Image (cartoon, rainbow, N blue to C red; front, side):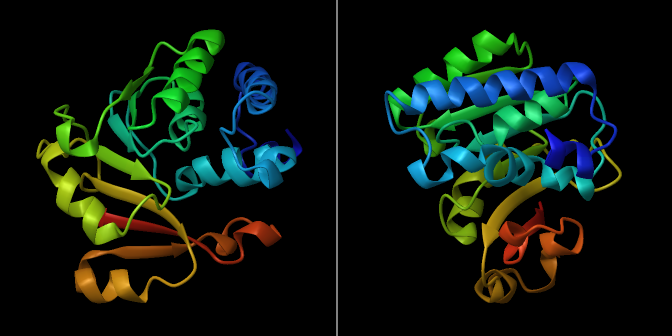
Length: 206
């Protein structure tokens, strides 16, 4: 856990143990079904765990926040965030049942009481949350269109509820679509690793 400890020195021993166990669980599952890209399996800590929690370098969330991870796939960013934010609650949603089965198994194996995964289409999910998080599963404007109904208007933090969207490459289209509403963070400014050179965090308050 050298990378995560490097950028998050405040991580607890219990969180390190859980992440190590989680990585082993993913490797085991990936040998049976393709949960994560084969080329990434040896870079889980950097490309999936550190990438998932990098938003914690920019935002401090109060206890009790609720997150919805739409298009969670194998459980990212939801599972790493639920380990790092044990006092917040996470819903992880995906339409692919076999991946949700893996996510629920990992949640159970890790004893995560603050996380739940469900096979569901985004359009059909009714729960409310402070934040929708996603790793570029679709165009941001499309994600906004179908998920804004799920974002609560009850403001709880020092910054507005909204969408936190992890993506690589160009954000010009998003900035044009939402004009001055979004804020784009270049992850390379806080995480000095090659993988993060082109990675961005887009915050769209609702």
